[in-house]
Each structure stands twice: as structure tokens, then as C-alpha cells.
Amino acid sequence: MYTSDKKLYVAHGPEGPISIEGSMANRHGLIAGATGTGKTVTLQVLAETFSQAGVPCFMADMKGDLSGISQKGAMSGFIEKRCAEFGITDPQFGGCPVRLFDVFGERGHAMRTTVSEMGPQLLARLMQLNETQSGVLNIVFRIADDNALLLIDLKDLRLMLDFVAKNAKQYTTEYGNISSASIGAIQRALLAIESEGGDKFFGEPAFNIFDLIQTEGGRGVMNVLAADKLMLNPKLYSTFLLWLLSELYENLPEVGDAELPKLVFFFDEAHMLFDGTSKALVDKIEQVVRLIRSKGVGIYFVTQSPTDIPEEILGQLGNRIQHALRAFTPKDQKAVRSAAQTFRANPSFSTEEAIMELGTGEALVSFLDEKGAPSVVERAKILFPLSQIGAITDEERRVLIASAPANIRAYDAAVDRVSAYEVLTEKNAEAEKEAAEEAAREEEAKQAALEEKEREKRERKSGGGIGRGLLGTLIGAAATSFIRSISTSVAKSITGGSSKKSSKSVLGKAAQTATQTATRKIVNETLKSLLK
Image (cartoon, rainbow, N blue to C red):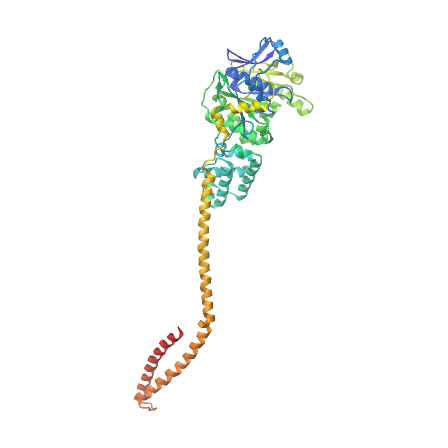
């Protein structure tokens, strides 16, 4: 329960109420414990306490239980017993203002982002690409940016990959090697994401993270993400939440130390964020966690064991609630020892033993004091929620969805504007048209050449070839004989028919040659006319 002195009352120990300092709430936290020890109820208590203080929260609802935070709670035997233990005489039951969201748009308002906003690094993680494939994906994003091609949804990215593959030689010199094998691997990974419904996450209108930071009637709005289906795809779940953190970090202004956080982010099943994650990405997460608190955002990781969290990040989680752990194996025992060592020891009991003795709803608690130092660990009982414990009905869910503000309902209808897919489709159509026209021209030229050959062949067969050649030969032979006869007669008439070698014979030869030339010219002209 929130108190006027900026303290968040969440547990009760042997010496009374235990609270989180409002000014230290953005220093992040950890809720850990084995299954069934009360982590979900603890998350609900913390969230509604923040809501009372006017701090909005975001939380993933794995089983539907957290949706009950929207409804008024009721007295029960368990709560009545806790009231007696805590000295509470009149609990003010009531629900919190709630917005329901769903990546798939089925059990809440859709939450989408564009491929460009997600970026190549997070997409590579989602698609589980190796280093080489990730490099090619980075190149594809760069080419898209340089050519003003918007990457909004997966069909944009798919066609962009195809475009780059077809023009790889053109881009290799400027951007680096683009292997067809890597392009193929990325395309297959995109198909896998689509088959699991992940394509619904990419599109417009893209979610505005400032819609998470809202109040209603002075109370912080609880943004509850339906994650029961999303959990079936752990990579999409963790990548989506990491994207949200990155967006918050990049877009929120610096606020420094404030009396209360601007937003509290609960990351349930936190181990999924780090399973199979590269060292480079873990470093990125560590950086975001370290710096985002200056933006007024507190992150609370919810998981089974503190060992699920990398040490670099675990060391930044100042507010801790540790529920029971079981030590059935040597590995479990090591986890218990590790968890105990993260607390500032209390001389009145053994932290390691207490972790294994805690009952449901009990926890070891250590929060940062007003100076930012961790307090001595205390064994305590977590407060009961004032809202409903458990899931809401389908009708209550429909009412909540329908009653959301207009800016939230606007996410329900997808918008498909002109982007890389449309631009490249048009380019491909133009290229195909030009290729078809060029092919038609080549075919026309080829057909014309074939027709010319056929024409020549027909002419040869119809007499224009052998018949015409034979006729020309016969006529030519006759003409030659005729020319010789004419020229001889003409020569004799000029020389007087003498056969002696004299000056007259020379004149006769000259006359014969001239006659032959003139006669041959006449005959040739005649032959041309005959052969046409």
C-alpha cells in the first residue's frame, strides 16, 4: 500500500511494515522463487501499490492471472488472517485502471512495431542468425536506408532480400560480400517467424511507448500483456520485451533522481531474455538496464533463481524479494548458496537455511534505503492484493477492451501503406515489361531472318537457283560462240579476208577485239533481261 511519505508498503516483518523507498524504486529489482511460492501474487501486490502511487506499470501475464488486477478484490479466509497479522482493520478493496494488450491482437489491443524500428540486431537474435548472416542483414538494412525503401512488415523485408540478392554484384564493392547462402538462410528464418504468427507483430500503426505512461484518476495505468500464446515462442517474447526496453531508453528524456519512477517494467520469466543470447547482446542489455533508471524507469526481473540473471545485471538489482527455493540436487544447493550470498546478512537467522524453509507468500526481503544502501535482509510475509486474485472472464475482458481510450483502440486495425514491397513490386513489374518487350523484339528479328531464308530457299527451288543457272550457262555458251563468229566476220571484212601477216592483219586483230567487246556488252544486257 502506498503511503503519503513516498513509501511503497509491500511486506510485513517481525518489526512491522517493510516498504520500498519511492526514490529508490527505479534502481530495479528482483522477484525470485520456485514455482508455486507466490511470485505472481507478489508481482500483483507491487504493481497495484505502484498504481496507487500514480506510477504506471507494464507486465506480461503468462497464465491470465494478472488480468484480475482490473477487478475489485474480496475478503477471504486467507486475507482475514493476514489482516489480523498485519494490524489492518479495513482493507480498501478495488481494481486498478488497466489496458489489455496482445502481440497477436486476439486477447487485447495489438502491439506492433515496424521492421526498421526493431532493427537488424534484434531481428538477428529473433531469427537466430549466425555472425555472417547477421552481417548480411545489416547490409540489407543499409541498402534500404540509402534507397529510401521503408521496411515496415515482413513482406517488405522479404522482397528487399530478394532485390539485394539479384543485384548482389552491384552492391558488393560498396557494402561488402553478400552471399546467396546467407540470403537464403534469412529468408527461411522469416518463413519460420511467419508460421508461428510473429508476422502479426510487424506492421502499422506502430506502438507508441508513451501510451504506456498514463494515469487515470490519479492512479497509474496497468498495461497487461496477454503472454500465454506468446510464451510458446520464447525468442519472440524476449525479443519483444527487449525492444520495448530499448524504445523506452531511446525515447524517454533524462529525469535524474525523482521521488517516484515514471514507469515500472516487470519482466516475467526473465531467464528467457538471456537463454542463447550472444555476449554482445547481453552487454547491450546490461547497458540499457544500467542507464534506463536515469530515464525514470524501474525494471523488475521475475524468475525462479537469481542465477538465471547474468552477474553484471544482477548486481544492479537493488530491491530484492526472494521466495523459497528447493535444494534437491547439488546444482540446486549451489543456487541456494548463491541466492543467500546476494543479501546483506541478518545475524538473527541463517539466510541460506531460511530460503529453503519459507512458506507460500513468505519471502526474504531487502530494499535500498533512502541513501541507496541495501538494508539487512528480513524474513517477511508479502501483503495481499486489494484487487482480484486470478483471471477475469472473457466478458470482462471484452468490456475492458471496448472501454479503452480512442488512441489505444486505434491499434486494433492494421494499416498497410506504400513501403519497400510496393516500390520493389512496381520496379519488378517495369523490369519484367522491359524484358518482355526486348524478348519480343528479338523474336521478331529472329522470325524475320527465318522468313528471309525460307524465301530464298523457295526461289532456288522454283528456278531461281539451279534452273536459272543452267539457262544462263546455255545462253552464255551460245552468246560466246555468236560473239566470236560476228567478230571474225567483221575483222575479215575490214582486212579484205587476207590471212597473211602484215600491217592489215594487225588492224584486223584490233577490229576483232573491239567488235568482241561491243558485242559482249550487248549480249550481257540481253541476258540480264532474260534472266529477270
